[in-house]
Length: 588
Image (cartoon, rainbow, N blue to C red):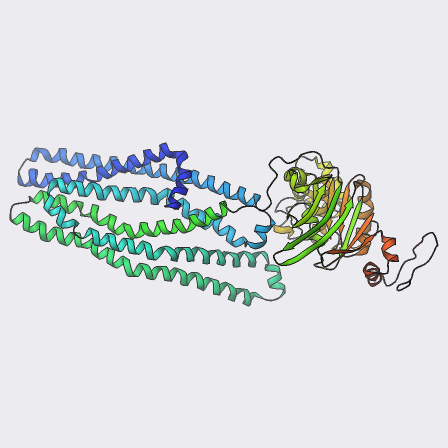
């Protein structure tokens, strides 16, 4: 009933059309009784009573009722289909809105295939229920009720005899509902797993081929596909136990009607026409009983899917926007004050403290897993710190309007993502109203203009999914141009030039200096050449800042930074200070 109440919340908007559809279903149910009644009249009055002048009028009524029934049925089927499409449209929009509101915590733990299963397969089950199952349940219940009432008005004793088997059918229908429900939940869960395997294989098909792992992936899919088959077979076994019983019991109506009705006709307590009417109404008892199993199937499938959809709609976001968040312009003052963060049981950042002012460039280096990317993720409020405060312009980021804050930031992430769009569209993603000349200028700054111009369609070239068709360096430069065009107050470059050659990196750095005036920039890198000109360099290890200072200061510190420099460059450069001392590796 919870799932029914949930879907009614969306149907309520269309309650007038919904009610009209149900009224038309009742009319069709009433019209379904006309032909059996007229058939009985023809036998008793025309054939036996020899009232031949009634024949054509009675046949005309039968034809008219059939045509009217067909037209009304077509109309309300169309009504319910349109209602279902509107309902699914609304729910799907809400699902997509929810997916856009959910944060990194959710996407870190949820597989894409599971999300897609809810957006497609589960939504289709919801649509089918609202478009077909609802009126079929109502229609079959009305047919059964009308037929029973009609039978009792004709001959109560024969009606009672035929209904004697109904409680038994109801018992088995209830048992079927109870037994089949869990199997559909398992089927939906396994379908999500199967969907995830397919999605991962498609997304990672280049890795699969590069490592010649096609047989492994095929086997992995086969295992999940086998699981999906077994779940469906387990559900089918439940049906195999109950459906034959329901069908057999439904067939008992005919036996009772012929046996008991025949005796009554012989004893003159029932006319032959009335028996023919009962015979014509058998389907009105038989069909709802037969349909009960299938409708139970549909309802259980709907419940399983509705739970999945509702669960996603109710999934809370851990990152919640401030109710009255501050929306003032971002100048670029950044402060981390004793910030710590853990992901599950793993400590990622521990007691991180530093400040950056507008116009400053902060370089962040450290080994993989040292917490460099997590640090800037907290700045963008992709996650919230467990303790300590991250401030922008002196205000805790948790107290600012999250959308306004991110609008004034730009980030080029490690994992470059390009949309299946033109190159111009990708660059202008953060500033869609930017003129084409501004797009070109951003591409020039990012050293992307030259290779874009060499493409067959230039800036109108369609980029393949996730940037397929472009080299790693080309994707990085397009992503950098996208961030530059946004003209942010705070720019984060997360290993942005790792895939470009040293000469291109140097040109990018020289050009960036011109546009970073007055902006706060964070550069995360493994190459010291990327951060050596920064105003402040933070050296991270196991989530802590172990060294900080300028390039020259860190070279003189004889620590981790100096060792990395020697490993990358083979020796120390001359470092000038007021004593004009040339430092060598290991010197004090």
